[in-house]
Image 1 (cartoon, one colour):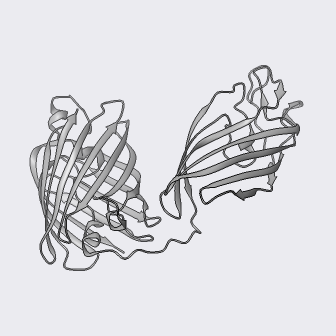
Image 2: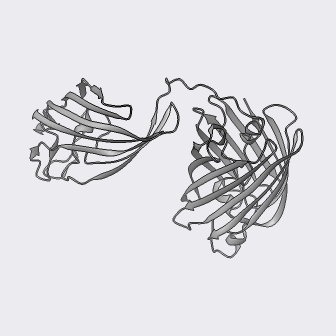
Image 3: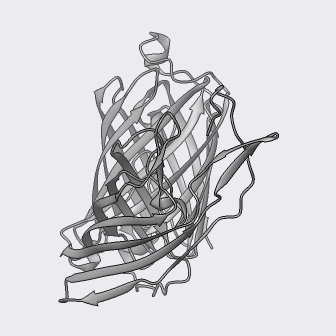
Amino acid sequence: MFTSNKEEVINNNLIGSLSFPITWKISKKLNFNFTPKSVFLPVKQFKGSNSGKFYGNSFGIGTGFDYTLYKKIKYFSSIYFPLGPGYNSFDENLNFSRKNIYNTGLIYSIDTRFSLEASLTNAFGLSPSLGTLNLPSSDQILYKTTLIYRPSNIDLPEEKTPIQERLRLGGLSVSTAEPINSGEIKVNYSLNNNGTWSNKSEWGASKKFSFDLGISSIGQDSLLGKTKEVDYHDTNELFLRGGAKATLLSQANGDLFTSAARVSAGRLRGWGWLFTELANTYSINNKLSLNLNPKFSFSGVANPSAIGTSLNWEIIRGFSLIPEFNYALKESSDNWTMAIRITKLKNKYIDLYTTNCLNFVDTGQLMRSDEQSYGVNIGFIF
């Protein structure tokens, strides 16, 4: 908020709200909600010895409904009617008024702990007190995406098949869709003969959602980097990336295949890189599975994309063959990896591989190195 002289007004305020939500279950799929609500906000704001009008305390009524469209997908819509005596909106001249607040959108329940909400609203606040306020000096519709986490909800473990246990170990340049278990931590370290290395840790926040953090350095040039078509990295530059993965479908639970969406972000050469991937895994039997993963990366430098394909074939007990190929679509280059995975010890593995993939971390999977590499990838789950 600013004064008439465009000076920023900064105050520390104690705010709060009190509501009494009432839900009427009309059917198995449809609920009607009615919520009387009191909001406590300051009546004035101060700048030195001067003061100005602010929202003040108010009372309102919220009404809405939610309807289950299909299994884990729910549609919701609501309207909040501010009744006073305070306000929830003001214009560019600081004239305060009351405006109805609208919300509508979809909620996808990933599991018992995580949900993803996408909605349209003319409110700008996220807390219970500020969520009843209209966008200042405007009544524009905002797009909102929210990840909802309820850590106290019960998250019952699922018994995994032998191939699920192997697939949760992941791939190299092509990921698998199978999640790690809730509460587990997976750590892996990769190093090749050209000095490229990576270290990645993943935490299972629930049985279908995980967070990951990776640190890496690339010791060789890419073919696209030599031609300056996509100048992705500087040799031996250290970079950090963080991401999250949500499992959307599960073959073990009756779906045709297992599918998981992952997004990550980080910086290289001063540029931000956003990486997205849809990992799809189909298990033919307990020894053989296929992966097909569309991958897209976005930055101010380039927007490379590719389709990753791979097999995971347990030849004999404790030894698996993992061939991988990334097909270039745009501003990327074809590359391949061949690995032998040794899993003689439970929750521990060693990969011996050769590859011309630039790097196994996100956008590096879409680039081809200027020379062939040989290396080892070690990982474990605890």
